[in-house]
Figure 1 (cartoon, each protein chain N blue to C red):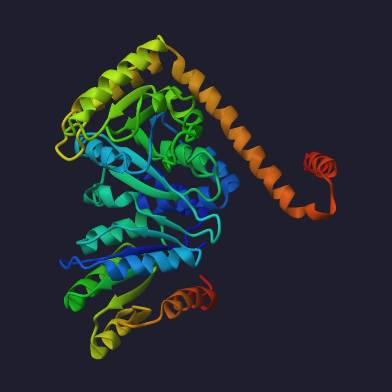
Figure 2: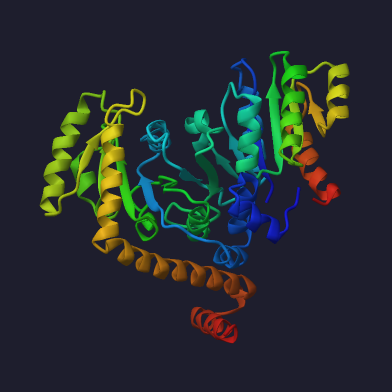
Length: 297
Length: 130
């Protein structure tokens, strides 16, 4: 059933899931309208936690295990999976690991397709995070697509980034590369029942020490739940800390710049699509786009 | 963009069909959520609402369709949802007719070409004007 804007706003204020689900759809289909609607709602700062790592490393399972250990909290999950560059279609399968929580009143899980966005997130990720903050959640977990080493956009969105590794993921040179390994605030080695996880732990520890930052590493097993309680506690402590020491404010400023960049990129893409690029040379294309962007002011 | 939930209620674990459908709808440019086997009607309906899907595609081979599908339809109604419900699986003709009376848009049996199902869903949205 269609809902009017006032029904959506009223619904969200009274905690109605269907109204909130509609707002998230507006975030995806018409972000400008979503920003306008969100501005009319009360927002409460939530801890935005990004989880990234290669496909199959256990990102969805880790979120499920965290949900298992968070009965007393209200949590949102944004699970992003890739869209096809050929058909635009997508198979969104992250929820499979979390379906035991589908009917939990305290949790709201939503799948997003990447819809052509680079960096492993949805083009509406900023609006979606803001929307979740109007729904009164304590934390928002964002699961990235998980394409791998260049999946770093999450650092512009999340307050805390968890980089998830598994013992079958390659040697230490992989861990010394730039990109993914630089954005972790917390590292988690999953599948801790694999004996190789201990070796990975010590290798990772020595590599992180080279960076001279004190970055915690956790060992988890998402099936037995081993290590999850410690991770949840560390996340809570980190949120209190970044609230207190001002780094959350800094992160949110950085996020706003990231949001502006995302909006501008989208506008450039829109303009580019209206130009017959095959008739122009590179310089002409650039000038035409800039001129058209300026006309929009 | 058509958003579809492919859902498999009940106790049978044979989800090859559901996966083939999910893949075909993906290739037809839809966003498809697949939630795996052994889902309860409550899980299916809550997922459909939270994900704000346009279509729920139910795959069922176990013979429990006359229990589970009416329950799903009833829960959707209780939640004021007008999501379009399509069914695929082993459904006798008389049951299919009954399900359609209850609000199922279409029932697809074994051997239905994938293109028929894709066109059925796309056609519904072209004509229903929703």
